[in-house]
Length: 205
Image (cartoon, rainbow, N blue to C red; front, side, top):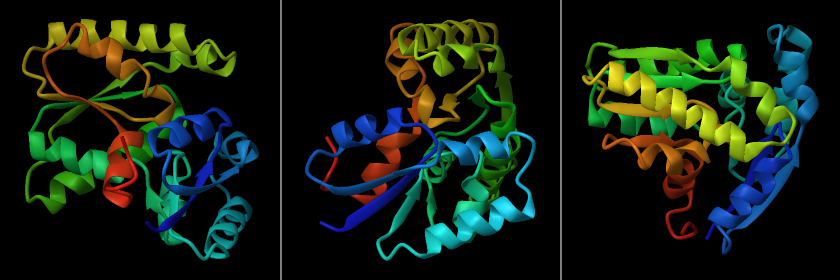
């Protein structure tokens, strides 16, 4: 089984990925400062730092942060949400893209459009702004964070019965998937599981 180095911008993801792939050889690097610095946009200095750090790693790299995903991809990393976006397009649209950080909206939307384009399909999705819920994650109240996300998504889907699938734009939103599944019959996609199944098909579960 190949080794994999993961770059995170939140410490909580370390335990999440270790639990998802207990047999895999995972190396974690946590850079919370990168997300903090990227909130107002990724400047040239931060871009150079991210690329140099990732390119110095010999193993395959997975970036779990959506905000810096585009820069990480340019450095040769796999973006955690790319396999998820591809799977969402296979399901078909409209896709509901739920996000909890303003800095996530643009890169997530661009990546989902790219997935539709690669499939020779028109981009068919709408975004759900859940940024008001982010403080729950920042304070460590992950259960309330997940439940609030699921409640908002359920309300939106019931108001838009044509929605075919839901994409949880950030890895930090993963725990909301189970709560969503209690109320919704359409697929709700979370990036950590899908990314690991793609990169380490024998190391998940």
